[in-house]
View 1 (spheres, rainbow, N blue to C red):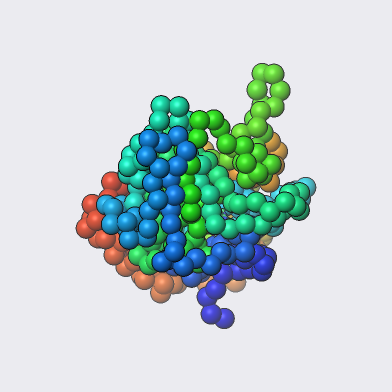
View 2 (cartoon, helix red, strand yellow):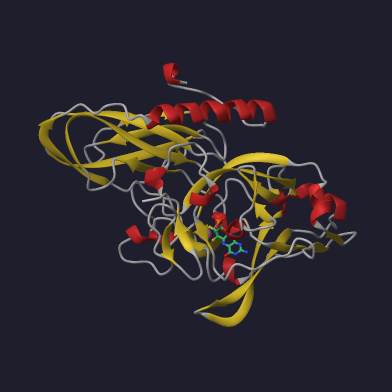
Length: 390
Ligand SMILES: Nc1nc2c(c(=O)[nH]1)N[C@H]1C(S)=C(S)[C@@H](COP(=O)(O)O)O[C@H]1N2
Ligand SMILES: [Mo]
């Protein structure tokens, strides 16, 4: 079976990264999940323009050549769809029934948004920046055709890591990922990173469009009742990739392998429990632990008794935020980041697991990326743990 994305819906394409095939820190573009609300627009580079207007001193219209002539920046970052993991919720939540794979990690290159906003010059009344994609369509509860549009608060829009991205892992964006140019908002849920960007409007009041009022919002309790909050930064989360749920393993030593991420922060630690959360063991973090990026981890699990084991992982961020044990019902079908058990069966036969050959390939990949980082003089701090292998 060739490696490919796992389709959840076909038209429009909503497909997952096949997490069981994750072998490296960066997710290959062809395997990187796709979340499309509407059909992919066809865009011709020669006629494509990016318009910047609204509360600006000088409205600007840029061609591809003008945009890409500006100084560029590269950021490694994980993107997750805010509905990732929705299919595991009980009771069922409406929306695309994602498994665990609406997530990926890539190297994003583009022009920092602030460079373009400074060219246009913000007027003092600016409070948010609105981004419009070229794609258009309807939703069951919105039969009138609409553009895909989202806004960002000024502070995040002006952050030097917020990019008008045109390359992903060194290659021009594929149509599915927003060709030719998408917004890229590191540390935030994918919905913020508007694809097929055509217009940026600086606005003087909070935007209340469909994708941040009807959809992609969560509830928060306040002293007086419930508030609605727009989905933004990603919280702390980890995912067990191997062994897969339902696996039957022999007694002996097994490698529990997964990923963990913490939005705008770096991951500080990952722990694994094999006894329903009564006790926790430190996992070893593999490769860089950088803000925005997921961290790969593994735990060598020695198991002597046959039985059914629910494996749990939990991550903690640098500032000490931890993954919750249960889904918060106020999050509805979004922000699904609780520790979800992976159940495996241990059978009596004894067979020590051999180090899989691909572990060496993984270590090699890590080293190449670390060297790349050093060459590009990224503002991320790379830390390596685990000694020998790396
Ligand atoms: N124009 C446009 N931008 C969009 C979307 C979309 O449907 N249209 N989907 C958003 C959502 S919900 C996510 S999770 C990410 C997914 O990015 P990807 O398909 O490149 O993985 O794109 C975001 N940007
Ligand atoms: Mo999403």
